[in-house]
Image (cartoon, rainbow, N blue to C red; front, side, top):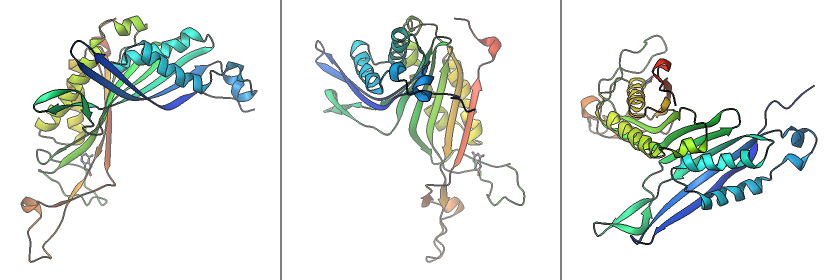
Length: 303
Ligand SMILES: O=c1[nH]c(=O)c2[nH]c(=O)[nH]c2[nH]1
């Protein structure tokens, strides 16, 4: 007989905007995010027996997202996600875990007449800061933070040679190529027992995000890259060093190819090898390189 193997439900794509008005300074700050909140627990009968008495309506879940954004700071998103998830465990005895995903969109303050503008912002790229929180009765609060959609390119300082050559290989070795990717980097925190533990030392979350972003940019720019694999591994090691409360760092990076174009058909134009200047960016296929680097378990500090 079939049985329900897993189930969770909730509201996705809840868009939330919150403004903070600093009356004294005369400035405003804004946060825009997209929230997904899914619940798990003793909800089987809603699927198997049409029993809606165990269902917190997804409409109520959406309302809760708004109310918790009003009651609590939405920054850092790790703290807001923890408050939101904990609410469902505190309120509904039959809910055993809440899964919160938050995507924070960029609104960067404008500089106008060489000064930061008090209330105007612009979207500087598709980069987002994200958090995945699982708040559960058994496991406390599990947080995974990430940066996604940060597009980077270097026009030299990247090589790829020494790879397997066999009857399927057409790719030439290169000692100088373009390297371009969309950064997707995540870091998993050691579990937190309570929301109070998340709150204590809450600046760790902005600190880790700033460190990770800085390390990614600096390593990408300065590493004489032997491969995407090796450059991403170096980034993981540095981020683990910079964030002692992080257990694990991972990357998922597309290798976005830029092909040389042979223009010799036009008056013998030289545009390959050392003469290459005009390239054809490819939309696909792309390489996709992933890794996760875990801290040596024996080196973990205990909370
Ligand atoms: O950095 C790279 N890693 C690969 O595994 C790979 N494979 C490939 O064709 N080009 C590249 N580049």
